[in-house]
Amino acid sequence: MSSEERDALRRIFGNTGFLIAGRATNAVCSFVYVAWAVRALGLQQFGVLMLVTTFGAAVSAATHLQSWQPLLHFGTDPFTRGRRAQFARVLAFCMRADYISGSVGWLVGSLGVVLFGTYMGWPAADQTAALIYMVTISYTNTSWSAGVFRLCNSFWLTTLTDLSGVLVRTVGSGLGFMWHMGLDYYLLVWSGTQLVMFMSSTTLGWLQIRRAGGLAGFSLFSRLKSGDAPGIWRFTLSTSCNHVLGSVFNQFGTLLVGGLLGPADAAVYRVSRQIGEGIAKPAQLMMPALYPEFIRLREKQDWYGIKRVTTKLFLMIGGFSILLMGVAMAIGNILLTWMLHVHWQGGRHLIMLMLGSAILGLGVVPLEPLLTVIGQVSQVLKGRIIVTLTYLPLVYGMTTLWHLEGAAAAADVAALIMLCICLRPVVMWFRRVAPGRRPVEDISPVVATVPSGAKERTG
Image (cartoon, rainbow, N blue to C red; front, top):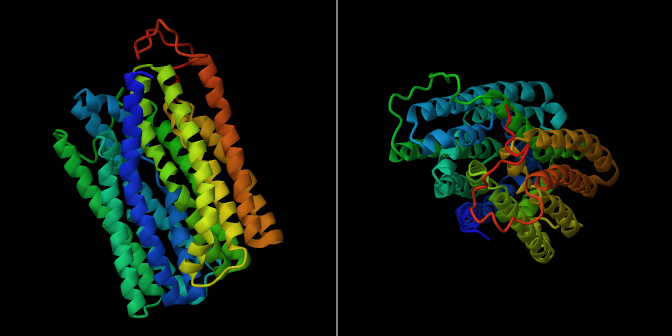
């Protein structure tokens, strides 16, 4: 393995370690604040809390543009080469995308509560509080600052931002448990968590930019010039649509379960999925760290380096998945019982099904950023469309027939389809641009000639 490949893996695992530290703390705290919230509200009202906040998160994911990806894709070169004015215009574009899409999300969420709140299993008495909670969507997206952290290789700032939010939610939930607060209070705590994260990420993002040299003459309203970022709208919409369809898979399944089975079952489904995803989260957090490294290798046209890094990550994730299954069998049902304060029949089986979906999703972790970086994000988008069209009717039918176990099994089928769709174009691309092993005469990590079709770009 070349030194460039070793350095890339070292940075990937180092940056993933920062993210894991933050999310591990978040996961531990979530076991505490969810348990406090269930005890304060009861399972039925807690289910309403989960449905309202899940709907807000789903609308946020469906309307927010993923501006951190175009910031890395089009901003890395001008940022590293000192073209600050060009980078400032790209950054301004990404910030505008965040704020405009946040406002649109607030409007969509409010209309959704008014039109569909009753159909999602929320009592009419709680819909006013849910409507007020939708304001949270306007400041949920902190994508541009996340892009700045990743561009500057300062992933620990993302961890700091997450910790600021989880601290507010944990302390707020504990106070609510002590004082026997109701649903309105807990919705305020969840909203306050997002506000603190927005403020901290925005502040840290600006400080990081100033530390890196500042942006002289920056204006939020500065327009991109010709040649700054060709195809940026197409790239932004493609990556954002992919994220939107992913949110349909992750969020709307909970909403559909709530509409079919009621808030109590939705709470069990949501918490068991949270446990399954929490166990698999360390490997999932690798995805943000992959983008900047794949971009560096792409700019050097080191296709064999990308192939080696991807293959090693794929093998490591496979081994890690075996360990996850053992952990879930040992402690999954214990965590579910502790968090919900009730023993749910078949809880271990349910969590194993949920973890199966998360593990299959791990296989997509190195594939999705690779397809995005090499300009084949349309393949990921196609996969998301197929999975969404398959998943929604599948989860409806299987939930109707087999209740929570059916809903979890539907997620497994959808995750397997997504993995197969993403794996096929990656294998074909490697066969074309990096067949076999790296040639012996190619001792440099930079390939002298570009294989045909290797440098495809979106837009």
